[in-house]
Amino acid sequence: DDAEARLAAVEESLRDARAERRETERDRRVADAVAHMATLLPGVRGRVTDLATAAQRRHHLALAVVLGKDMDSVVVDSEATAKECIAYLKSARLPPLTFIPVDTVRAKPVNERLRALGGSAKLALDLLTYEPGVERAVRAVCGDTLVCDSVDEARALAFAGPERHKVVALDGTMISRAGLITGGVTASMESRAARWDDRALGELKAERAALGEALAALP
Image (cartoon, rainbow, N blue to C red; front, side):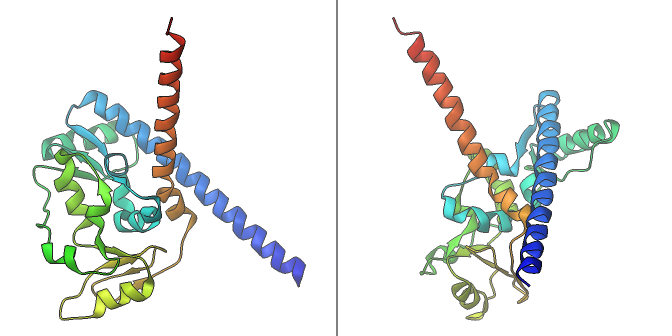
């Protein structure tokens, strides 16, 4: 029995590792494609995951759930730029991507009452840092989704009162306005959440290299 349980655990770990490797490879291909489009078209701002950063590590998983597949969506300045990007993807036989044109995307104004709910509840939008020029795109993706610490608090926020809310707990559990509850963590979700860690590590390494060069240049 112990051997069978261990075998099942090993097989699950291997499946997660393969899924994470596929996600990492896909992320690299998408990043390369977006970087190349940005050199061709000045209106390409970048992927949501690169433009919006989770300020605190404790929120990484929940915000990865909030953004979902839109972490890979590409923010562009206009619908015309989006069409040019799609034409490029087709000509280069690259997988399709979703584009968010800042000039035409529909983004509801922030419901200010949701900033005063109390407890640990925060608007997902307020837990991200981003440049003002892409605020409309980030707001369109996040909407009025709330993030809170626990599933119990998420349930209370989602169902209490006359107004329903979409809420995500720190463990990744999501409760939709319709009352659907989605839980569990996949290797793909963890890989997406880890992108912000990888980005921060890369920035630190670049800063270390720059400081090293500056020190080496001192007389």
